[in-house]
Image (cartoon, rainbow, N blue to C red; front, side, top):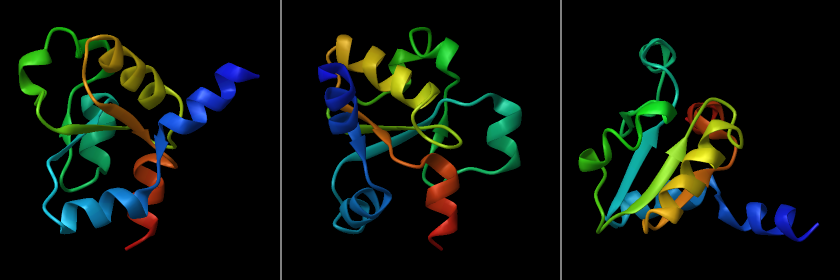
Amino acid sequence: MKEIDNTANECIQVEEVKRALQQNEKIQIIDVRSKEEFENYHIPEAINIALSEIENQINQIKKDHKIIIACGKGGGRSMDGAKLLKKMGYNANWLCGGTNEWLNLK
């Protein structure tokens, strides 16, 4: 049960991220879906680094920013990506509801 609670704490709400971006906080959104999924639809501010490529593309990830990891629905690949980046010393969270939630809030 503890692990579930810790996972929930890593999830960040869409509204919180949007508010932080409006306040010009240092945030980088990384979409960890495939290139094809990303091209279909994505958060406008996001860059695409597939989950399997995070370690190879680490130079694109800004160490001095809060990193928000997004996937489609949130909690699958995005949670795995955030956990990986946390292990590597990054301030990373995954986006609750993912890209779908973000785009539905327009």
